[in-house]
Length: 238
Image 1 (cartoon, rainbow, N blue to C red):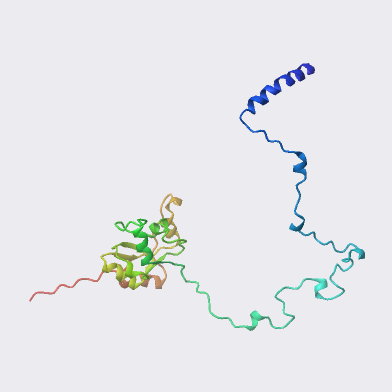
Image 2: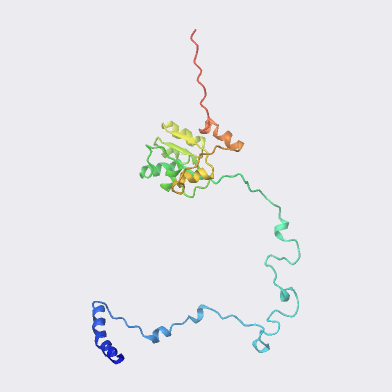
């Protein structure tokens, strides 16, 4: 039985190989070429074996010498021999403001350039999500601050909502018939605004808690969204 199968294999095999190899170039790889692959000698350096007898040149003390700190343990690179280290000699300068906000700066010149290219639609209210999607602002962490650099080239009325804005930028936009609104966003609300696809139910908007934030967004000079319009006084006719 085995002899019959072996004879059939010898007959059938050439037909199958010609059927599957038709239209395909035959590539032969020699085993000698594959086995000859090796590392470049100059690409690495072998580690020196230490503590293997005096004939190696690095025996007994392994090249560390007889006594001393460097023989028994390692010395930190910043160790200065026992004298007062430099980081203790120099005084501390400045401080880290824990309440500082990392606001992305957006200038009016860049905003006008994005409008001219058609990447921002000035006919609709522009939020920080539009600024992020159009790549006018990148890496928004705490919000966007609108600045007036390039105001001489700005010529489009626009309604924009940002975290903060300078008085010069507000004045330039309102002179053209646009509006600026500064609005408070905490980390959760800002993330829901910029990436709503991560929220099945959008969270409620939080109001500012810190006193300085409350005073800023109640200020009508910076067009805070919590600022109340001044009541109109009508003159009484005599």
